[in-house]
Image (cartoon, rainbow, N blue to C red):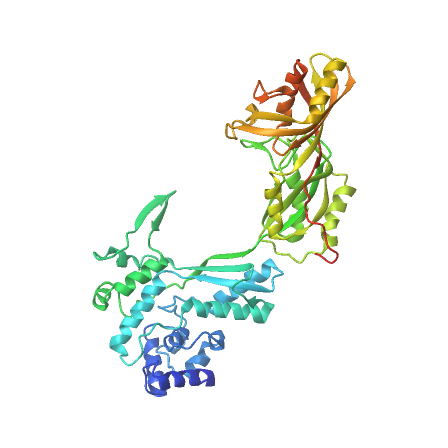
Length: 505
């Protein structure tokens, strides 16, 4: 017998936790347990061998020899699925998890592993414990080594040995393994069908698939704890019945905490939306800032998807000039996070060399907490605009001087939600302030309008009045109809992203 196994079992015999009095008793008990189609690794669990190197043994014959187990049918080599763990301790499944992780080429140095077992596992383990009370009365019926802990150990140690991925419960890299076993999927249901069950389940059908709610793992364990042995034996076989097919990995989720890349974008042309703009299934604008910036970032960090969050947004027909508008990209499940500054700057350079209508400045990795600057700045930032406006008749010099004098003092606006966005915005009246206004004649009925305003001011509606929904409007001040021909945002006064420090990456 392997010294680690032998010493552990001898210690359990000595302190009485195993319940058996000698190694011969252990050998005899292990041999009879195999007749119930229990795998040798589950036998170790029932002998309270903690998760450790022995569970990584790829030749189970070695453990059988150590425990002096003789197979009833030698030709089978113990290949039938275990009736307790349902085959979830098969190293082939561990290899599948590690292989999937390896294929994704994450640059993570650690990972946190979680395991979800079929609910029938808890029923079958309880069945074996009830069986021991009559077949092996000396063997302790204390809860065996946790199956989840063993599986997690097997996965984590294999990741460590093959890929140098450390086990860390606080890691931003998550590996979520969900086992499934259709053959025994409804075995736990009898617990809830009992008259004295405290759990009420509900089965419903959705899109041709039957779902059951209320039968959680916690509910199953709670019911097992309150079910008497007599009641259990009358409803479920002890030891648990053999199975034909082993459990499979029904779901394997590899996910990593998002990373954030901040910067400032410029729109040098019109008819470019900030994010893809659809009406129904029809795309309205050919280009979006999110696509132009997000796609090369996605290729760099190899993420599943990205989401652009801007400090406000301009309309698709409005240019964003000057130093650009602050934004960040949230990159979900990135495979690569060890990004050098020059790799990110290369995206800026590429857009510039391609003469893209969307340019970026100060592109850089930012900390998750830095994204709050965008949210908190919404109420405090100001913006500068330049617009080409038209009046139904030219303004007199006196009227022009009057408007500019008012503009120097600032103008308090009452703006109802614009008609053009009423379908997606609440019908509210918002108070906004123009901090500065200057109107300069160009030719005839056309004028250049420069504005400084608080965030959230509807500039187009201020110019034409939106059928009286913005008061006062430029048209009100001029005493004639007015409309806006072109609009540019010249600056957004929000210091973002944080300045790069030499050596940051």
